[in-house]
Image (cartoon, rainbow, N blue to C red; front, side):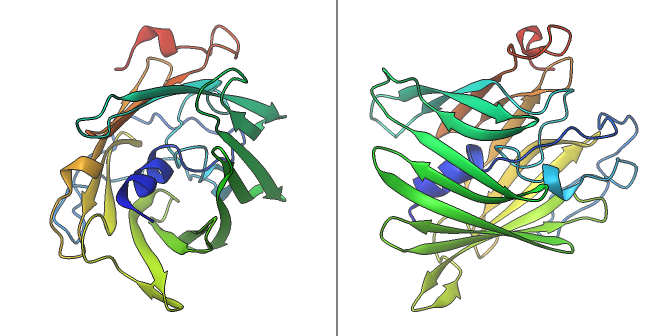
Length: 258
């Protein structure tokens, strides 16, 4: 999988969601812990426990608003010197979790995600982008949560989250399978470190296997007054989320990011 496909998965990614029993915008959580890479990752010990069934709502555990997830999102891809590509994805829910996400029928770029669940947990995701693009299988084990990506040519990649004691991701390790062996890439992103403030991710720092920053894959996160994630922005891509299909008191995305 190339680095752009990697970024698509990290930005658009995975879906599962059920309404949390406690709010996560806790005051007082401070940025006083460092990762092994030296980045301040934040202290989530005072945050509510983040349940596994909320680990993969579209972009990981980043939705802290009152709703189950976004109604739609607009993605802008910035492929170097080429003209940026912009497309809209609308989600369909089955109860309180997504079952389908797709572009409008008249869209030039066709894109469709389908999701299945095992009990409360996301089990598989299938992505069709003008034909089958990839499938994802999810596994959960203690403080690890892993998803395996298989593309249409049967190439495999693995993404493994390490979670803190309250279930928030600390790091994400990326590797590809070469000759049946999981291999860390020698160029491009190999590890991601998550930085928090008051139980919300503020930045996802991308690093090479040697620990050098990868600016193109480092993203910032913005939230609205209701606590929804409304924007993920990196040099290669921006995704803007909308929540207007939910109750007006919940749909705070028009208030702009904090």
